[in-house]
Length: 106
Image 1 (tube, rainbow, N blue to C red):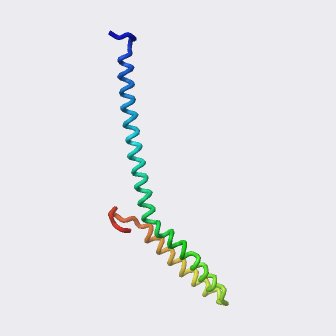
Image 2 (cartoon, rainbow, N blue to C red):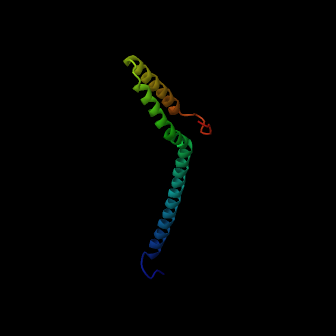
């Protein structure tokens, strides 16, 4: 016999809510693990590019500044700029292609 009417229903509801809460916590843990994994993949995949860019950018700037400093015609400067932009565009296109195999090194 219930001492308080409806107490068993409330206890059952409490048990159900606690179980649901635990399931939600586990789902959040799984999602957080997936996010960490993707962040590590991103860091491994593009970490080298950041390091390379840190060293290449100042060198490229120095070389381009020396090249533009020389007394060259507008056509020669434009040609150099077009070549650099074309090379950068090709590099960008290659990096944007998505590999179909998730285990591929690119």
